[in-house]
Length: 114
Image (tube, rainbow, N blue to C red; front, side, top):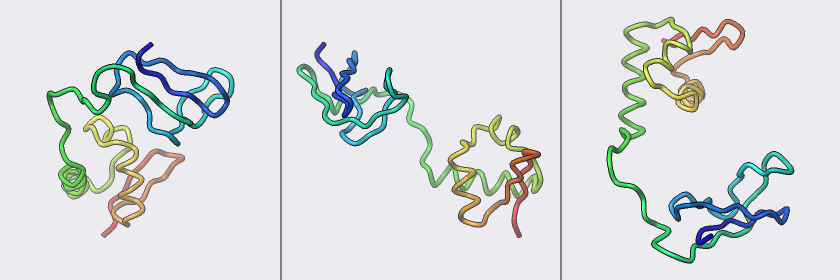
């Protein structure tokens, strides 16, 4: 296989495309241990830095601004409703850390902070 990553546990993972290769230190799924760190990765053909061209996702800043607008429109909503609007869980956690919202993990409710 022209694209492979070697894990610290000794396993080797093969990839079909160079742009899929994880970087050294990344955690990847391991058949034996659940997740293991990548020790090294190598590509014998093509450009490993190549990325597919096409639609680009909106910038993080734009998406974060959209979340602020959504919370102004509906100050009390659910995580599920925000996920339907394509806000990621990672973004919701970051917004909570920034003091933009509060989450109730038991009920799944999200409330905007003033």
